[in-house]
Image 1 (cartoon, rainbow, N blue to C red):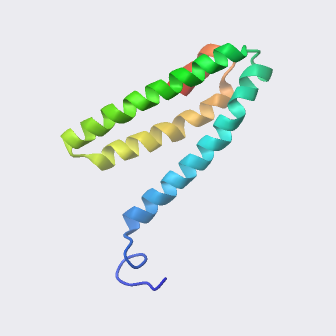
Image 2 (cartoon, rainbow, N blue to C red):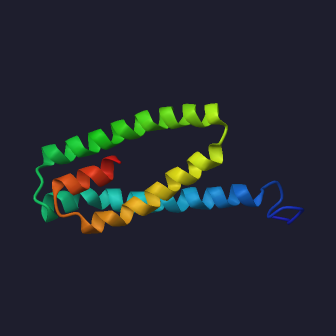
Length: 112
């Protein structure tokens, strides 16, 4: 692409940064969440039914928070603050799975 004015023609540096942040967050999430059930069953000896409950609770909380945080960011008018907070929380919580030694640890990290 031809450079013109901004970082790339038609794209600001903020758009590129947000895109890369989203990409790397998604990649790291997929790597962890693909292996997490195996870790819970084999490493922590958690039953499959409990794994399903944890995953279901995590997805339910995520769905509710998406609606609520979207509504709140529209109301407040600070979308960047909410995006930075969400990506930061995700980045800080993922490494904590390495220290999880019980079902409560995994549940707390995965749901929140």
